[in-house]
Each structure stands twice: as structure tokens, then as C-alpha cells.
Amino acid sequence: MRTYDDPCGVARALDHVGERWALLIVRELLLGPKRFTDLRTGLPNASQNVLSQRLRELEESEVVRRRKLPLPAAAWVYELTERGTELEPVVLALARWGSRTPMRSANSLSPDALAFALRSTFDAEAARDFAARIELRLGEDRFLAEISPAGFTLTRDPRGEPAAVLETDADTLRALVFTGTSLDCDAVRVEGDRELVRRFLTLFPRPAMSS
Image (cartoon, rainbow, N blue to C red; front, side, top):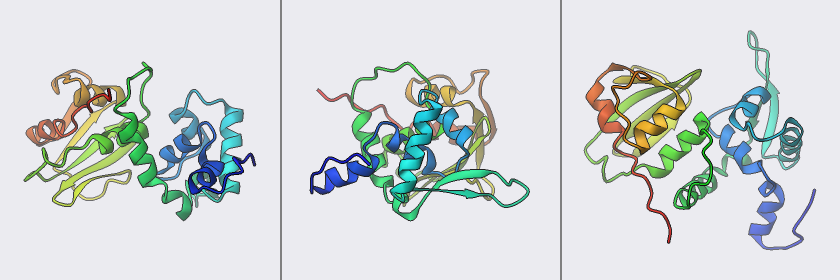
């Protein structure tokens, strides 16, 4: 393992997660385990060899582990260890910091990256006195967005009965939230309380750019 050979805690952390793609792999796994092919879909610009190498390194650092799902799935997946899950506030803080820097990529966001964009831009003041459970269906990905007095949570495993379902793709949801695209566009389907969904989409203001 390459090392900064620096006793500072920051350097010691970067010895384990500072390589290119490492923290983005963590981002892709924070909402649940994924197969290698799912990780490649979420990180299309990472080559197969580089992605495999980073996963091996993260396993050696006990940030990620590999396990086989029980039948009938019987697929091998990667998931975060307890140590890896502890990186969540770090990744979220980086998302907030990075969202205030100029956009240089025109590429799409993966569903998990979009989930972090929502979490990092959520405006608790705008959500005052508002509560909702909304299921987001982005292709094969399903998320449950919950707004309550305790804040905003986004989980991959929707349970119970949401007040509304918003079905679209990640690019369209990104446009709905951040560029004001109309909820009435052809790429969107809403079940349940449509006005609740409209209010939900206003809770994520675009961050002001750093000077």
C-alpha cells in the first residue's frame, strides 16, 4: 500500500481512501451493497482494472467486504464494513463542499450520486412544518425520501405506504430539482399526492458558488 508516511490523522486516512475512485466507491455503497456490474454502472469512467484494484485495496483496509447473497439471488456483492460506514459524514461533507465549486462535467449523475446531491442541498428551513414519505423510482433503483421534524433521510429500501411515488430517471429528477423543469413533462409519472411532490422538489436549492 502506498503511504504518505505522515503521522497526521488526515494523511493516515488518505493512505486508505485517498486513491482515485476510492471515496466514490464508498459513495456508491453507502445506501447498500452492490454487485461489481452495478458499481461499474455507477462509475462508468472507472476502468474495470482500476475499479477491481481499488476494491481490493478497500478490502485490505477493511473499508469494504465481499459476500455472497443467499438464494435465490446467489450473487456476489460488495458492501461497506462498519468502519466503511463511518465515512458517511465525511463523504456528505465533501459533497456539500464540492457542490459550491464550478461544474466542469456535463455527465449524468448516478442514482446514488444524485441521492447525495439531494442530501447535501436539503434546506431544513424550507421544510419547516412539512412532513412527507415519497418513493423515488429511478429505473431499477428505489429510494424512500422522508422529511420529518428530525430532518431528511433517503434510504434504498422503501417500506410501508408512501404518500406519493415519483417515477422518472436520474437526469430528469436532477432537472426537476435543480433547474425547475416542470413536473408535467412526459418523462415523469406521479402516483398519489402530486402537490406533495411539488413541494418536495422545492426543498433543495442550488448552492451558491464559492468566490
